Length: 262
Image (cartoon, rainbow, N blue to C red; front, top):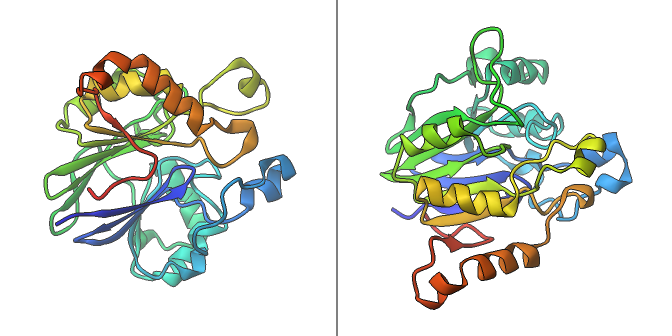
């Protein structure tokens, strides 16, 4: 069964699985602009209103930052999809409780496979944002997720810089068929502005090769002008870095901006 995937912008995904609709880090509001000012106006329109999301079976949250764990999106989504469960790091679970989401709906997953329904499993892995960190309970503060749908595996990195712990954890869950990686690089000027960046385009390419993914979907490049990367830049680096392999018909992985069926 092919899995339809919709990119929601920033880090958000919607997967239509055998276990129902699975959402990852949906940001479906203007919260960041409302809090941080007009320079953080959305560059992409809201694809659907959170109160319209009445089909969510599970929502995966990678960490507590507003563009991943949104105080306007998640309560409205929880109300529209009353059977939906939320998987999140332990500290994020407390934030979800503060949104009015009942504790029976919140799962703080261990670092192991968790069944979401027939043929669908998810495995949390570390994310380095910018370091791999654990809270006082020994739980990861930042998650990525490997999602297995009938043997096909998608790695959603969340927000992360390259890190040996991330690479080792994902390699242990091979094969990875699709990697969804942030490319809004960490740099001095973004750091000075209070922006916690992620890996660069070149680092994302190298990580994709190391984990042996067949397809790379770059994310976290499209939403806010101070934290964006231009698709032409991503494509140019790919075309030049892998020119000889592309010309030989043997690119190391496919680069796509809209996730194909999975």
